[in-house]
Image (cartoon, rainbow, N blue to C red; front, side):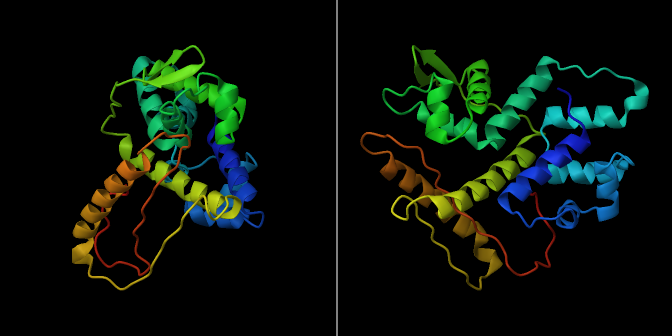
Amino acid sequence: MKMTIKSFLMQELTKRQTRNSSYSLRAFARDLGIGVTTLSDVMADKRSLSKTNLEKVSIKLMLSPMELEQVWQEYKQNYQKTFEVDEHDIVDEDTFRVIGDWKHLAILNLAKIPSNQAGKPSWIAKRLGITTDEAFATLERLLRMKLVKKSGSELIRTSKPLATTNNIPSMAIRKYHAENLWLAETSLHNDDVNCRKFIATTLAINPENIPRATELMIKTRKKIEEMLEEGPVSEVYTVSFQMFPLTKLQTTKGDKK
C-alpha cells in the first residue's frame, strides 16, 4: 500500500503515544520543527506541507529511500507520475532497513546460535518479541540480500559483506541509534537487573580529548565483544556506548551520524 506523509505522521505519533501516553500533538509539532496548527491541518487533510516543511519532517521521521520517494511523488502529484520501484530502489531500501532496523541485526546474530530455528518466522518472533509478520518480512529481506541462507529450519549467516551507498548511511545510522536508545529504555523497565547493565557518568570535559575517547571506546567495545562471544552462545545482546553534550555547544555542527 502506498503511504502518504499523513500516514507516516499518524504512524509516528501513535508510536510515540504508545511509549508516552501524555505525548501531545503540540509536543509532536515541536519535535518535528513545524507549527502545531500546520500539523493539525495536515492530519485533518485541510492542507499539504510546504516543500520546506516536507523536507524538515522527512528528516525528523527518518524516512527510508523508498518512503521518501513516495512522499515526494505525492508532493509532485500534478505530474501524474506512477510510483515504480526499480532494482536500485530495492537495494537502497534493503540496505537502509538492515542498518536502520534493529530486527535485521538481531536475526543475523540469531543465525550464529548453534541449532537455531531462525529459518522459521514463528521462532524468530518468539525469541525477539515481535510479530510473525515482522519476522517474516525481515527474514525475507535478509534472504534476498543473501546475508543468510536456510538449511532446513536453521538459519546460516553467509560471508557476503553488507554494501552501502553514499547517500543512505547517515540517516540509517541515526535511526539505528534512535532504536537502540528505545530498546535500552524498554530493557531498563522490563528485564531483570542481573540480565542487563547500565553504566553512566556526567563530567566536565575538554572537547579536544573526544577523538581519543572515541578511539578508546572502539577498542573497549571490541574487547568486550571478544570476551562475550567466548564459549557456546545462546542469546543476542546489544552493547552500546553513548557520549553526548549536556551543554549547548558553540562550535559548528558536524555530520549527524
